[in-house]
Image (cartoon, rainbow, N blue to C red; front, top):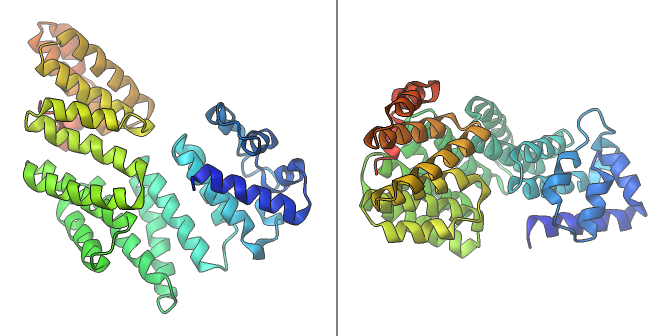
Length: 350
């Protein structure tokens, strides 16, 4: 069942249980009545457009007025947050935080919401904020360490600690955290185990260990396929395409990028990697157009490191093509200085 289907089911159940109309639920939760109507009527066409008004914000009547003991509001907020993860991370974060405000005395839904919040913050590259929420999750795990279900969240803590270490360029800390997750899994597939394998593959890629990287990515793929995690698979295929490019396997890279096309968050990387392929095939004009589109995509998402990587790659191609003025601008801008200081330019070596 998809996140949207789960959200729709929960809303219908809540309306029936309380004998509410849509406007009653909107008043009590801050969810836009127009958005609820669209979802319940199965109209998905304009969901991302009306999503911007789907969350009325902290000034609206709060979800606390819905019978907190039933956990209904947490279910609604988690389902809605999950839906928006594929559409707009900002609104996903708002929904999870709205749900968190209603879980003061219930550790498990609170832990679930914290995991979701940390995950979104990490996708947004807001590492410091993610680290603060991770401390809250670790405290919650410690306080409830004898209860059933805690082990899952202990492993999630290790997984997210590893991702934070990666974003802070603490490679040794990241590797240790991901290896801990895999060891604790005892061979059982789970989403966070797949993330650990995927992340180890990235670490090997950064160290130019392409075969080791492929092996880790293969383990991650097996995990994500077994669990039907499509979004994770799409992101994995983008990173596997980077390995294929580094090894000169252009057709394989193209095939992998095609399989990843549905993932909105990966679109700038898909464009940049396709630019690499076209450049290697001698199609410089097409490569430059793709690279500029990738830069626009990274800029619109505030992905500074990725933007810097793309800018340096574009500068290199422009220089080779004799367009020195444009190349100098790409090479000396603020994003380029970030790339040089972070060593990000090694990601685009093709």
